[in-house]
Image 1 (cartoon, one colour):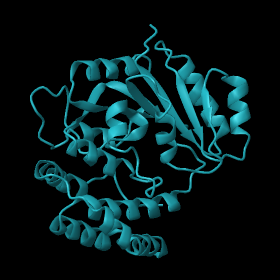
Image 2 (cartoon, rainbow, N blue to C red):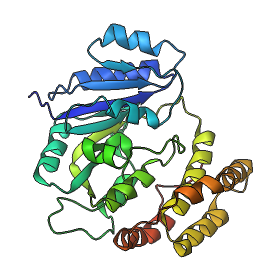
Image 3 (cartoon, rainbow, N blue to C red):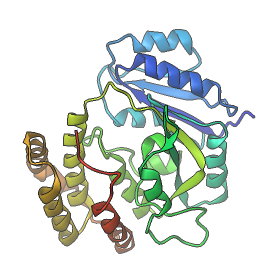
Length: 298
């Protein structure tokens, strides 16, 4: 079952063994998708190892850690209509790429399809899955699944042209909730995002991660997104809620300080979303405030 509609894009940094496992899994898929890897400045021999074991993989080496922008770099090389993102500690289940491409083929206003995330080695659903299934965002009748306000990059297939037109991932956000800004920009462009329970992406969380840095960036990026796209009232409410609920430690303090220091460029780039998109975001506020699958820990 060779399916030429989707290219898989992977970003990596100093996770050679895990990346090679992911590429092995992708090479076994019946769809035989082309793959592009952006090696974000690894120093553990990642690039030569990929070249030896998977010479058919297109390897990009920007020479430094671009974070999520490494995906933008790869999407410039994509020649298929759809792109599936994948982390170096995740992989797609057989048939899921074709299933997502089928949905995108059928629905011209659909930009992203997010799959069920199965956490390995236990084979259990990620806690976020139940929230995706029960998304409160009102959906048009033609949408093939629940409407989403955002997506998780490592488990999502996107329409490549829509991604490019929306500008891809913002270079300042780097990593940590970077999808939220792109998601609302897609919605502002008239696209819809959906969840597909019959498709699967596997995730075996890497032990080589700096959870403290990820928390700092997550808080900072949430604040930046909020003030870049939300009206003043909702932005202020979300800011105050974060200030009350994040851990009271130096990590949170640094995150708020970083966010505040960026005020000049945030105000320059501020572009409030259309009322219809803001209405969708408001429907998500209660779920976000009471979520057990989201949080700023580490």
